[in-house]
Image (cartoon, rainbow, N blue to C red; front, side):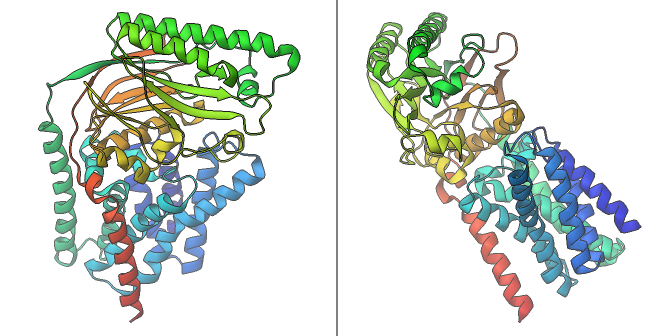
Amino acid sequence: MVQSVWLLMGGVFAGLYFGNAPIAGALWVAPVCLLHVTRHARPLAGLLSVWSVIFVVACVRHRDIVPLDRILYFAIIAIASIVWTIPYAADRLIASRGSGFASTMIFPLAWAALEFAKMRVSPDSSWMSPAYSQCGVLPLLQLTSVTGLPGIIFVVAWFASTVNWMWDHDFAWGAVGSGGLLYSGVLAAVLIAGVVRIARAPTAGPSVRTAAISYPRDHFVRGEVTRIIQARVRDDERRMLRGKTVRLQDWFLESSRREAGAGARIIVWPELNLLVFKEDEADFLVRAQQLAREQHIYLLMGMAAVQLGDPHPLENKAVLLNPAGAVDFSYDKSRLVPGWEETLSRRPGNRILPISDTPYGRVTAAICADGDEPHLMRQAGEQRADLLLLPVNDWAGIKDIHRRMAVFRAVENGVSLFRAASTGVSTAVDPYGRTLATKDDVSPGGQVMVVQLPIARVATVYARAGDLFGWLCVAGLVAAFAISRW
């Protein structure tokens, strides 16, 4: 009965940190409860019960995030729940062999190593990482500038295993005091270092007025944009839809002219927002170059160039024009979403983030799902970029969590991030993860977001060392397993 109560509590708190709007504190409580179950129930029964709770909670909380048909959805969540249960199995298998404080390291090593491995090999990379629930805890968020996401997972998981270790010793201070003080000291050091890092961050310095402009919702009839991107255009409607794309291009150019007149020096259009048939692309580009030249702006255009009659009609790209009207770079999206985008796209990008030296610092760019892959986005830090521009196209079910994910890329690489979103939340953050502006584009007036974006590159350990901490967790777990067998 008692174990059932802890299992239920663990499931409730897991539900609060899963999903699109996670609660930071819930991540610290849920594994404490679930770890207590697996440590004190029979091994197989305990692990099955934890897997069952995680599966049910994940099915409920991720339904809007994973848009798949029912059978495939439940199958993927079932597999993911097995993965999320592995750290509990590792703790029961290895940590149960010892009662010393060192046994508390198994659970955090296993969870951090697992999250690291998932980011490297899984098609969805860092999606569903519990670390993203800590986005609003700025002092803790600074840890990612050293360790990346696995560092946050390690600290949280170590808290759970330490509490359970003390619990198993009835919280007798003479037996557990030194271990409890050691963990408390480490956690305090991490948080204090984060506070100091933020406090020492410069508050004055050069900045550039930057604007995001997303397409007007009433321009197309429902389903028309999808049919254009998929090149499912009938001959009898081609002229009509071509006229709509031309008027959309006019709207973007005029809106950008207005924002440039108000002082914006960098303007970003979200992913796939500028629709153009491939046959009209050259003419449109001439007009856009003229605008950039006349207004003396940098214009990053999230474009969908569609080749009618091609089985792979879509080019999903971001094109940066400079104030001279020249193309600084044209970048194709590297991480294509499995399914429709992967099928429709003519080619993925080359996985090399472009770079442009401007009077406003070194500017780089990626597109939407590229930002979900930490080791791909690490190029921004390696190339000493000052500004990271990220055009995206979301849907309602992911708009909050996807915004949170992007913030981590800014802190990891020490860059200012400008995320221009369609059907989602545009946001601008500094290299410390502090929000400078945010706007939901479906809200009134949400098509435009303007901010003074700081030009303040900050060198980070993660940009230099990469996933060293993740590899150390893998090595530590392997060593712990070998020692326990020996």
